[in-house]
Length: 97
Length: 438
Image 1 (cartoon, rainbow over the protein chains, first blue to last red):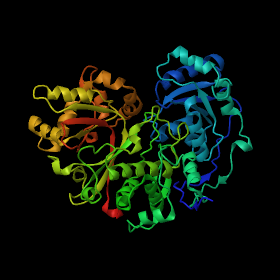
Image 2 (cartoon, rainbow over the protein chains, first blue to last red; image 1 turned 30 degrees about the horizontal axis):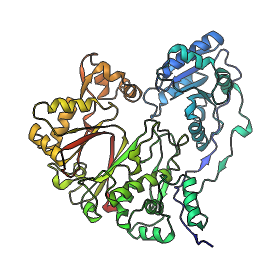
Image 3 (cartoon, chains in turn cyan, yellow; image 1 turned 90 degrees about the vertical axis):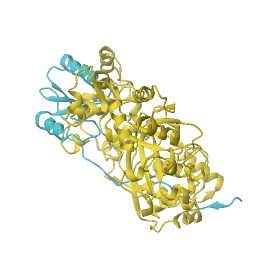
Image 4 (cartoon, rainbow over the protein chains, first blue to last red; image 1 turned 60 degrees about the vertical axis):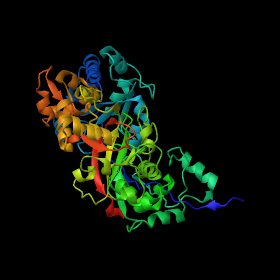
């Protein structure tokens, strides 16, 4: 019978995971302001422009605002998040690559 | 997730389908497994407005459901309890692997993606203890934390974990302080950028000779045990210490990068360099030993020597050939380094770096049109960050510097079999003293 070896695990130590509560969902988008947040990835502004056109045609009761993040996606952007919280009701972020 | 959890704004994130596994994984480890995410086809880049409208009108390639239906539902449909995930879950890492035969353990390490797909040395208690004997640091001391991208959670690793990975890489115990110093940088050698990055490490000071590192002929190739295994240890520690580097899940480099096999680890040829050593430029004394690490290693350009008549043009051509978002680190054979002194009068390395900065120029219009400049530099310029904010004011045909001066570096390496030299497009991160880890 082959010898059984005891070896060490090479994997590091992950931080603990705790559930984060999501924001309450809206009853409807009618009469609401939806921010389309451009994360400044490759041509995401063009994509969000098309999504904004979709809203205008198919859900005109929802107001949309295209907003570019202030800097690169690597940085937190509290100014933009504060604006969305103050003036908007929902957000669509795009596009991750 | 910040908008959801901190600002209370219902949010849907739209991604391309290639990122399905990674974004779901990130949501899970950040405590929101049910985060509303919708997918459209890859790529977005370069598609016409009409093509992107078809994405909007079309189906999510992951679920097959209409994209906009998923978006609207994502903002309006309440979360079911099973979408919220567990309140917390155990993610502890056992110290030992279940005992098994040598063959089975090799298979396990391979199957778990704990290796770089090359054979490893199994980290037995005795081998790890021998590695640990090369430092006064305690096995349970936290050395640092790493993550594959900024949006993943950082994982911690101890001295013992570094030793385990060093054993696996085939490193000898006397290399261990250098490997610990690399670990202490917290810079991953397994970054997950879709641009397929590798890392690079330059070793300076007396430790180079103490452990027999190569700074001369073949220094960057597979010809020296210390160079090869120290860099490999950094790579293995990175992928295991940060919790993985798995294509499609925690690694998104589109083409991969073969430099990652040993993370381009070599010693600087201080003795044959006309300039001060790299670590001295960064605040250490010549008699101290240090590692300096670079990330985002992607592009390479090369040439032979410096011609008397057109060397300036040739160097400018090389600089123009690399992406403006990957600043140049010159890796000069000593012959080429001395030519820079003789031809250009760069008695000080700083003078050479000044010249490189002032001669790596590009019309502003071309510069700002680079995709990576658009992604990573233009937003910072518009936010007023210098020197880019000033560059942004330049007329379209004005020549502007491609790189910040502080991002340009020079290292001397090579054995003078010829005057070939190259430019690595990469980002210097930091220099860490080795002696602190002995």
